[in-house]
Image 1 (tube, one colour):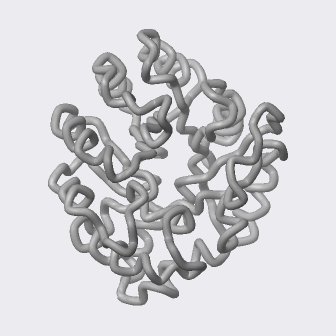
Image 2: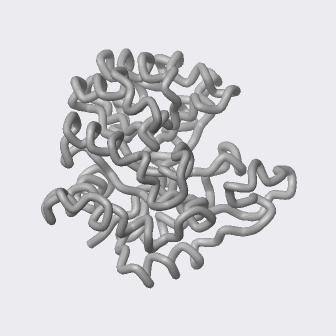
Image 3: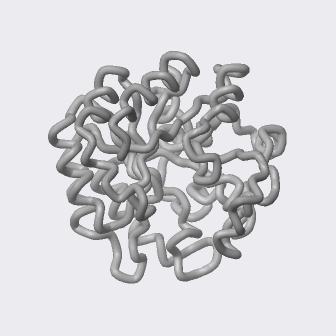
Length: 266
């Protein structure tokens, strides 16, 4: 079974203009049945629904989808980490609505202080949720500090923290491998590659991360629906076997399925 560990769905919200030509616009619906179409076409059995930017803290759409089909979908919610009531809001979405993870987004300026709410991190530990972090290179030091202090909280770095493929993987990114509770998503290459698909300028970054983290700590996701504008769902799924033939079948199975299953469906 293949698991797509990074997808988004949303309802139309006309308050948000299209943020860039490279991203899907919130002025159009991205419904669950559209995602299901791509999953079925390409033999993807499960998906992790990550709350997008547009609905804010209303995680209802993804929570309801995961609750209706818990064997197929898991939900990663968002709460505003700046608020003192953030821990209680997280507990509501986890205990009452069934979400399995939390996403922090320091890459977006309003949430740059996502690491400062100790009570939120302590609640993550108590609830046993997986914390995904949408970060940029300047946030890696803060991730390392949190990983060291909360060694029993699993952290996932989304999109490899948007590295510069020209400069190669930063020492700070590779150093996160020293924390056994940190995993990485080699996802969203279209967000930071300087070249079109198959994003060959990302090859060295991927290989360096693989060597440091190992396939046991890497998780694939398509970044649906944004990937549809850049590569297509099928090419994103088959990228690992076509671009990285040195990965064994067992390695691909870990990256494309088993690691996500262990975190979200165990």
